[in-house]
Length: 197
Image (cartoon, rainbow, N blue to C red):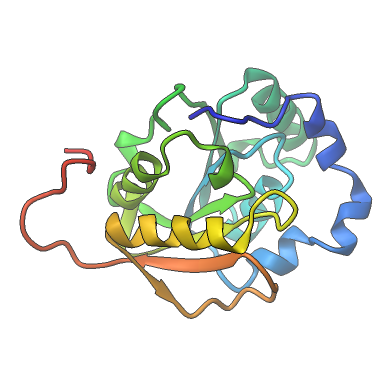
């Protein structure tokens, strides 16, 4: 799903080990992920969060990491192989307008939309696709970077999520700023026009 997409070469800069001082993936994700979970990570880049998600999901878990850029996925695959985590990570190339995760319908425990929603041309379609992938008790974590996204823009994203059948729940992630944990509301009545069938 493309709009203002982070250039692939910036992926190397985003892997800088110093980033862990202010955004440690394991510390951020530990309250949400457990052994055996299925995790969906749209906009995974070169896997800054992916490898720690795979470690937390354990050998019986799986991370489906989706990105629009083949070079980002190539970097992720190399890093996963070096870390011995390649078997836990399903790296997928997204289409310009779809994640391509219809096969995951109702199977995802947690979806991680970290620093990605502001890049999407159609947030509502993205949210509908993620909601379809989630289990009824699944969760969607949205984190946006303060430097790129205003509080007002984040509020619009949360309103869109509400329109697509999500509700905000208590977030155990220790982080201030533009972060929300969402859960699907139970489906009632016919599907909305924007929801996948």
